[in-house]
Length: 120
Image 1: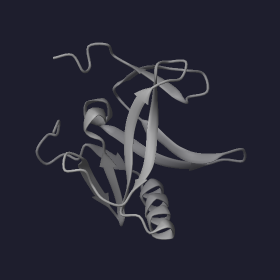
Image 2: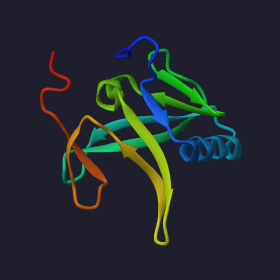
Image 3: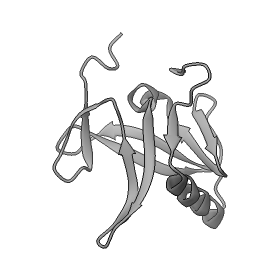
Image 4: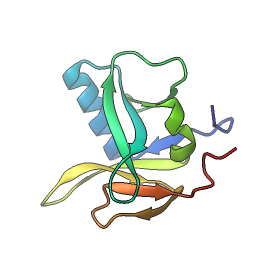
């Protein structure tokens, strides 16, 4: 929908692709849908949900056995994002390195996009 020919909408590090593939296999799901929604102290939050069937308008990215689907309304916000999976002593989880984010809250759970993004 918002893609550039020959360029994936999002990329995954090998760690993220391996973790997504494990989650898909463990739950018997066909992919992981990522999106954004209003919420959090910075205004927007990422969402991640298991899916068993792609929506016809989802952007589908497949890499190393992992399948990520990008919800239609989130595509413009997520284009160019790298998804990583990090493990530390205190936590493990997906991290989004998104060039479209202009601000984030202190804990990193919510983000803010440039207000011109999404305006036609």
